[in-house]
Length: 301
Image 1 (cartoon, rainbow, N blue to C red):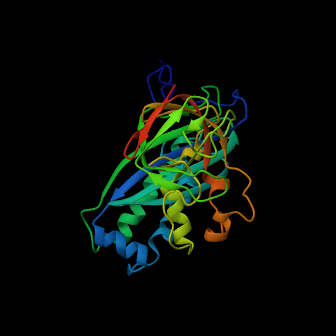
Image 2 (tube, rainbow, N blue to C red; image 1 turned 45 degrees about the horizontal axis):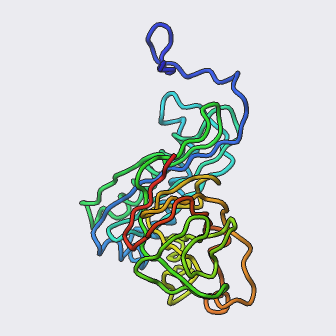
Image 3 (cartoon, one colour; image 1 turned 60 degrees about the vertical axis):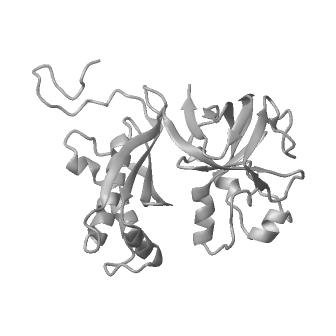
């Protein structure tokens, strides 16, 4: 493979992209900042003297995405059509995710990676007075779309199952079970949503449930949004339709992202608002088997 950032004399150059096609391009990057439990708790409570840590870090990350070409020598100055930073609390820190979009002739992978880096550095800067042991790690590209090279999704174990949930009626809250048998081209055995259709299994991240709690919705737990599988550590809704996952013993294919919310259902009455229409996903079971609490979720070809 040729290294395009060198000219025919072996010296650095900015790659010529004038002849490339204009396409819609997206890049998603993630990183973590690990910290002491008491530091994390003070961030959650808004008890850091330097200010609202995540609000400032979010602005810094977006600014970092916009300024990438100023600090990475061979990056093109790209017109961004969108940039967003998302935070999810971990047991020992914060997971930072940046989504950057453009419509142009070159991608935004570096912008997404820079946004994550600057966001994490800003969190460190605002909290270093109380925790100099913080560690920034695992900054990496998770997904990119658009361009001649096509789509890319990181292929590795990226998440885990924290709960398997079941109900015998539709439109009601599901109850956690230790493990479930998922039947090929049907779904979870004895679950009301199983059948020969494209929405056999529903999945939702605990991170999405936590967002609802932060918005003031109390007493939430796995299954409350009627998801069959509650996940951790993977933003399932960021992957394209057709992506396949190995979940426990099963192989499942993503068939739908989000859905129209039911009105008047038990979930709506209890929760008041719902995250499933935007961040829940649905799959069909390609290969059946058992799924248990703690099973890994892996991306496969």
